[in-house]
Image 1 (tube, each protein chain N blue to C red):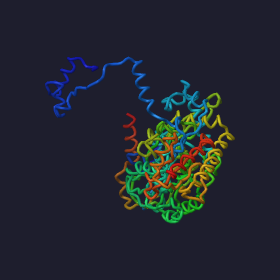
Image 2: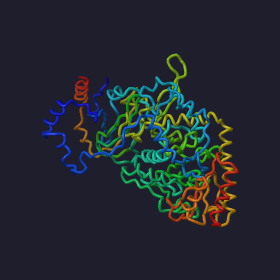
Image 3: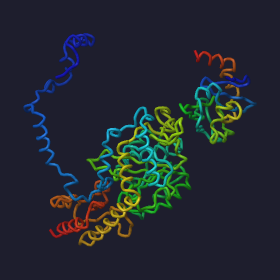
Length: 130
Length: 451
């Protein structure tokens, strides 16, 4: 399971990559593995929407489950990954690069400091695996 | 009285609760209602009971005894004997999709055939495995539209010429949703002169426009412009259709409807006092993720043989929980099978023939009745299918009582739902009515005015 060091992770398995005051958001390798084959991604937001931490970003539907993806930070949507509509399986094959979901302009970049870093997230996953 | 508990168990339970006797549990019930002495007649044998019940039921009269001109949403059609024969086969005789659905390939195949027939009939892309009835299917259309726009569009605009029961059911389903407004009741668009006022209500806050086809008054309205306006505003359009009419009418799919729903009762399902009926629910492809209900798909098994599965199940409430479009994922399996057998037995031409017979006979009846003194068509220049509105010289209920004496069931009294349509009768004519029946009916109506 990959857990890139430069990202921050939410307890609900989203990752966020912060560059300046911009954040790119997706779901973690652990999350896509738990979901199994993703068949559909329904994004709940549009460009220009302003969102708060915890709001629903998307519903990801796999062959065995449907799960909500939440915003790990607050901000305004500046880009949406249109490829996911036609090729939802990239969430499985490349969750951290091609599988990004949205980019937001962060209201407050320091908000992500509350999230797990890679080591803490890995420890959290191990704990969950029991 | 049978009780599964032993005296000892009862004793223990009373002790836990902290009362002395079972009687004490009912202390709050006024004394005179407690343990009433039921004045029941002597017990009877099964044979005696059967005789007594038969005697009681012989006081009833049904549409088999009357010649019925009553429709208004449920219609008496001929049901080929094969429908019931196949329904009652042990392999099929259950209302439910089995809990281990893929084991029951026959049931799934029947549902798949049903779905295929419904898309063929409506000109839509996808049909689910059915809902309870036309009214709940219409309400599910509102649900779908609401969820499609993620609650951002707040208006559900329902034409007043949609079946009043459907309108009521839509309201019931919508009442729990935040800020949703079900509109249309105050626009008298059943007077076609006010259709413009209805169209003017469609705006960019409208999630769904619901119309009926043919409408509740039997009229065939060209909804081309309405669909265009709705789509320009980004709103969805649902047609509530009568399946029999689609034998000869342009299907909702060709009007570019987004959703088409209907009651499948006319397709081989008896009137049977109002149910069980069948809700037909069809959509265009792009709404499939928001579709409620079961959906059967065709695939191949590990040996490459054709097989049927429940598909796209992550839409449904047992997986998606509160995010699903509807909390209903059951279907009206047995009734869907009835519709499937009915359509298959009739075939394409037979079905068109039924549709055409209804149309022709209704038009003959309309012509004859409106020729009577005091009776006239309420919408004289409007095309209609197998139902039409007659303005009567007397209150409809009075006329209907008179008709009953002659073993006719008269039409529906529209004053029930439309106060402004007092003395207006909605008359339905199906293939079950002969020319002679119509002539006799007209003769009795003539008596009414001569009295």
